[in-house]
Length: 574
Image 1 (tube, one colour):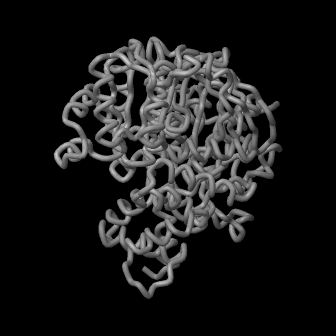
Image 2 (cartoon, rainbow, N blue to C red):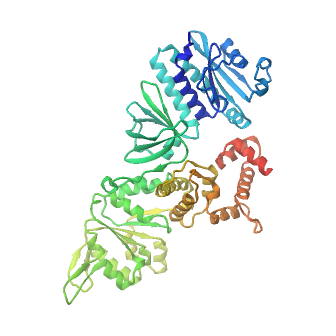
Image 3 (cartoon, rainbow, N blue to C red):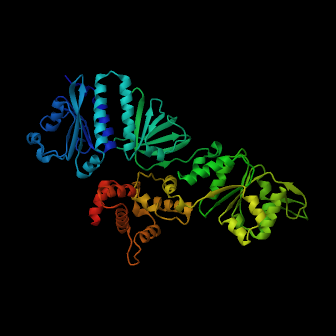
């Protein structure tokens, strides 16, 4: 007669697989006869599909089964029980914790977590209490599954367990219910797939490729499509249908019918205080006919901001007309702005003011205007009318005016190169876009968007981004701002191999050289990626200290695990 655990083997195998994937430990489940019910991880991968008898090699598990208590073995192989194990000499276990699966006061089996190398052991020890909580909670969940009673308690336990799981892993996790609604996602998932509303939200999930180790899905959320690569787990539950675990890298599908769906304020990327303020001002100013002045350094995407402002306005179906004032001489600019009338044929051509009627006219680089053109523009703004060059009839302006400037207009006014009257006519609804060097927290968010766009354009999928990659980019001042960041991401995607791995060695040399000089300003030093990495780690240790706490802080700021930091310190003899 099969044991109780064997009766739920498919569910047990899924739980083991999910736990191993999320926690990055070896997971095994055995029944009261010490037959393996499920296993996942390097050690148990071959036994995961068969009912292996481990009675002769499971001395430590048998102690948990017999005692009915949680057991922790910090150094497997050194205990008296291990001497009777036939596999003692070949045992790979470096650390093991196990919990009994209890039903009506009796142990029906054991759930165990094990690490097979020192790196995994150090990671587990760092969050030992959390792993232990996982172990006990999942053992209880298996007990509930065996009892097939207390449905409500099972649901609550599963939900609580998922909430703990979601935010402790370094991968994205999405949970879908029976109606394929997205009901849960962890912090990594929220960062990569921004959702405006509260969960649950309607989602369309299409499996493009199903594999044992990797699947590809097309996910539609809030009218935006994402192509995700990861692992899709089907869940046997009354409430939930699928769990999808994916890496820190995704590609987006091209938006469909963008003109029909209207504006997307999320195009103004970033989570910094400045980015939030810009989005707020766009929504505040969108319905006003007053002049909007957008200022910021070159490359900060002032035109994109103006475009979103227009799309959010009540007249978004009307024309959005753009004119760069720097592109024309005074004479040509006057004709472009005001239009012309031929004295001989009496035929005319509309200027930009007339072309933008009932819509928005964007005048780029207003700071490049000569004083004479400033005076003519000021007169038009004061009167609200425009007269074509060569004509005599004035036409009323029915367009909302948006202007951009790179230079400080206030300083130009003080120097006498910008008319005071024009300055005060323009400075009504200001929006300032700070340079990237002043909002470094936005570099990763904006960079990821450009990476995904470039990958889609080049037919590639980004599977993983090395933490050091972003750490380096966030230290660079980006003098060309968003434009330069976009160009860098284009270069990186084109230099990337088809495996989808984005690593620090793909960063353009001029950026690496600049960061290297900032970390260690020695002219004779020949900079390369390894030297840059060594200098960065050394600087972090000098800043936070070399004691245990200092190393933890250094690893956190570097965006790497503590075990990786120790390995790098040994490699560079730090």
